[in-house]
Amino acid sequence: MDLSNHNNNIEKWFISRAQSDFPDSVDYGSNYKSVVDKLKNIHSEVNAGADFTDETTLTRHDSSHIARVIFQISKLLLYDKVDITAYEAFHLLVAVQIHDVKNIEGRSEHENNAIEIFSELGIAGLIDTRLLKNIGYIASCHAGSYERDGKKEKDKIGFLLPSYVYKDAFEIRPQFLAALLRLADEYADETSRSMTYLLKIKKIQKKSIIHQKHAECLRNVVIKKNTGIVEFDYYLKKQDALVKFPKYMKDIDSWEDKYLLDEIFERTVKSHYETIYCMRFLRPLVGITKLSISIEIEKDKISEKNPIPAYELVEKGYPTDNYSILELTGDALRKNGGYWSGENLKDYLTAQ
Image (cartoon, rainbow, N blue to C red; front, side):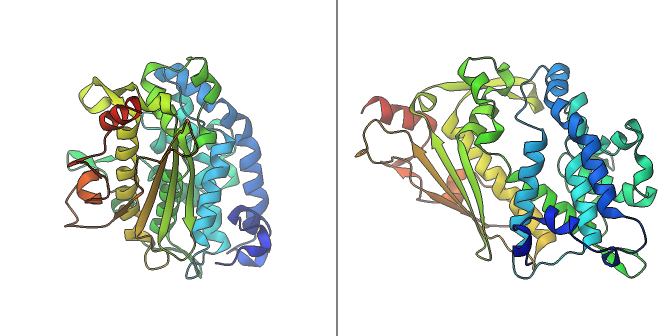
């Protein structure tokens, strides 16, 4: 999709659309601007609400995160085979604006309650009821699960959304739009999202420290147009590589102490499987086949060699297989008969 006349930004492209690009006489551009304006102050308070409710220190869920998600969606849309209509862009952009807003009341079920904000702000009339319902489902599929046949179902996009819906002659692809939002959100964690000063003065809640540290050391996630490659660029401070951080495991209501390198390995595997899941709905228009990860360790001297090799994550095995980082990378992370880990990195650095 060519967005070059709009700074490669889908939001700017959408706002410039003519009325004839929509299925009726509704001024979707103005309505979208009204939604953004009404939510602006709410977005600035999301972190405070979430932190109060959950006793956490959430990474930034304000307008800067919304902008980053839109940026990454725009990068995905730059693939040559992709095209979306202005009407689809309205669905997608409103879903982006509301997808995290209910964190203001706590993270539990935030994704499923997103459209309630329209009634609470008295702006439900801005968007047709059926359209708003579709937008709510798209937003809800960015995270979480739902109850199906008495158990949790994680395939929300596949089960909750149709492949196509229509308004007059206009086609909308809810699964495609939801996958764009979900994957862009997965790729939107990076340094500027972390609370770096709160980390510095040690004012981060215990259960959030490792998540904030992960965001802080993830310098960039780059979607390489038409290559099938997404690059993750990490920079790990030496002092952070030498210690373990507490991590709360919600599923078993317990804690573990974990090296940041091991958290990076785990998070990149999660991103790998999220990519595979979303590709089910984005192919053949968007085809990401490889995550390329580099982890630079802070050096005392410029001549020091970076110890952690770059590695790649590509699809392998049967679809139900859930491979570990070592099974996915093969020999790439091998070290002296073993493999790189947080413990091995600490031993390496302390021996220098």
